[in-house]
Amino acid sequence: MFLGTHPLRLDDKGRLFLPAKYREELSGGLVITKGQERCLYVFPMAEFERITEALATAPVTAKSVRAYSRVFFASASDEVPDKSGRITVPAALRAYAGLARDCVVIGANSRLEIWDTPSWEAYLAQEEESFSDLSEEVLPGIL
Picture 1 (cartoon, one colour):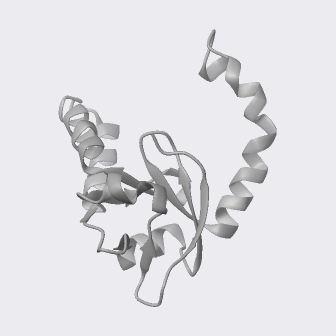
Picture 2 (picture 1 turned 135 degrees about the vertical axis):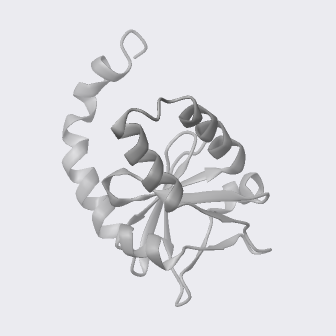
C-alpha cells in the first residue's frame, strides 16, 4: 500500500529518486504510464501484471476498452531503479504530465502517482472541497 505525499525533484536527465520508504518494494521493477488528470501512474510489476490480466478479459469489441488499452500500454515504460533508488522518467511521459523540475509523488493505494507540483496543488485545491461529501458515494457503509 502506498501512502503519503513526497516532494521530489527531477534532475537534468529526467531522473527521480523514489521515496525511500518504497525503494525496497519497487527494487525488482516497476511500470510508469500515463494516468488520468495528466499525472503518471507508477505500478509495482506485480500490480501492473494484475491490471494487464484484467484488461485482457475486457471485450475488445468495446471502443472505450480499445482506446484505453492503446494509450495505457503504448505509453508504458518498464524501469528498474538503480542502486540509489532512482528511475528515469521517459521524455514523452514527462511531457504528458508537464513535469519540469519540482514534482510530487503521492501514494494512491496500489500505485504511486507523479505530479508536477503546481498541477497537484491546483488539483488538490479543487478536489479537497468535495472530498468529505464523497465518502458516502465512494465508500457506502464503510466510513
